[in-house]
Image (tube, rainbow, N blue to C red; front, top):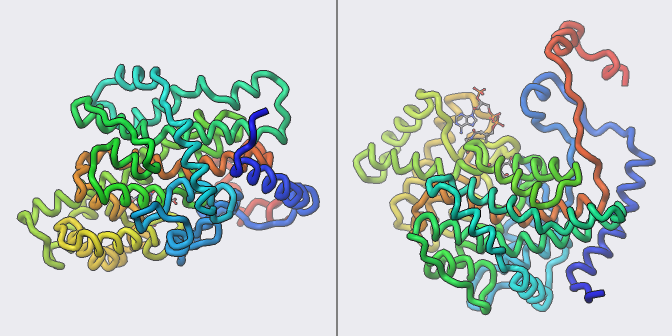
Length: 446
Ligand code: NMX
Ligand code: MLT
């Protein structure tokens, strides 16, 4: 049997130590109530219903995301840095999300080497991508490429052999997650160069880390390697209820493998209320810039543009959030980067101007529960600054980053043996009956 990597051995020990906690909670405390559901939540997208479990990240409405208990600044400070860069290895963040431990430099190196060994994208994936119409959305291409690789799933293969025990399922899921994680950045760069750079490709450099190689394969000079590292880490995880993570978890709960599950998650990320918002923000900012005469607008001009958008029945892209009730710390991290590295960029000035006026306008508008910016309000502007100007590619970047958290979750889902997801539905007649009666009797008796 091949020697287990440090990461895999650590993960096995952690999963085995964790399992009794889940078993005990389920068996001894399964009836303890942690939430209740009202009609508004049943109709309104299950908002705030506590019905998912993850230990990889937690989103506090007022503080924002913590990865394995650490805030974004704490995470960036704690993880080992790429030599010559102020930013951490993406590979180290993956180790951290998977295990909850900050890796040593040697532990990061092992993951860097492992990803390299697993990074060869099968040729048939390129054939599939090349057979697609060139005007297909890059998210369609990305999702298709991931799904195409399902034939190589070790989980599906082991499951098909009929001898895979429930307690062993994390192992082939881990192998699939590692194989997929190693290939996503090269696939994304391939799509970019095929679609927008006239089919010219740049080979990976075996001496570079994931972020460095992504910048190289995209054909974008420094400091885009740091932008890539920051971007992938910031987008990695946002607890389990967001559309992309939840979709992947749901699909994998049927014991579908990581390829099926992650591709499905990407189809959710491609929606404008979720990951596509980053492409929408840039288009909207540029529209404003052009309409106001090719300059950074005054506060009054910006206010008018915001009201015009709202009065046209559209949302302000990059603002609002289903859980957050303050400025997204992922927005703040990008703001700090831009303040340091591109303070005079006119679109960055626009982002700042929007931040000045949009919360007031949205509060006056009175609909959204959160008038503050989310991660997408900023990200496109940084990409544009460094020459990645094809907006419709931006969600693919989100997708590469999101894999870090989602794939970690899928490994733990199988490690802890989480059940197939199957919430209960009711009919509108039932809702109307319970509305008249002031609640469902059995639920009130509980
Ligand atoms: N501009 C205008 N109206 C808004 C906005 C906004 N940015 N955000 C929410 N609303 C409206 C929303 O459409 C809803 O209106 P209605 O009652 O007519 O349906 C009302 O405010 C209440 O919505 P909330 O409860 O505040 O938000 P919800 O949890 O339903 O949705 C978002 C969250 C993120 C989908 C929503 O805020 C939005 O559409 N934002 C703009 C798109 C965006 O930035 N998406 C990216 C989210 C982050 N990500 O990366 O995924
Ligand atoms: C995310 O990163 O997934 C978004 O902020 C959306 C969410 O958390 O619901």
